[in-house]
Length: 120
Image (tube, rainbow, N blue to C red; front, side, top):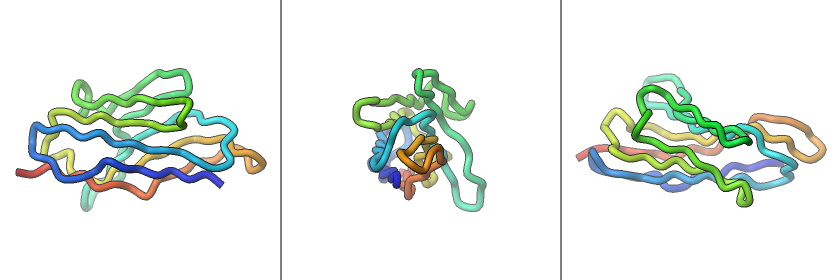
């Protein structure tokens, strides 16, 4: 029904930058909030950043001032610009969206995840 596909992960040195993208496709009527979560090895998945349909944003304290979430409404795509990366940012990053799909109604959808590794 609805698919989320992430891209942009990889290996980067401390202090470097990466930009993640997540494109939603399928039988979409409207997309509400789009979020980025991350899960480090042995830890729970946590919310990193969120953006509402109206453009309001929210960030985890650990990434404030370094990460920026943005959204292209025409392309049903959300981005996460990550600057000043630290080794503790290493995790699998997941895109999440609350979507009203045609026929099936409102649902919560996840991408497959993309690995971000910050290491020298």
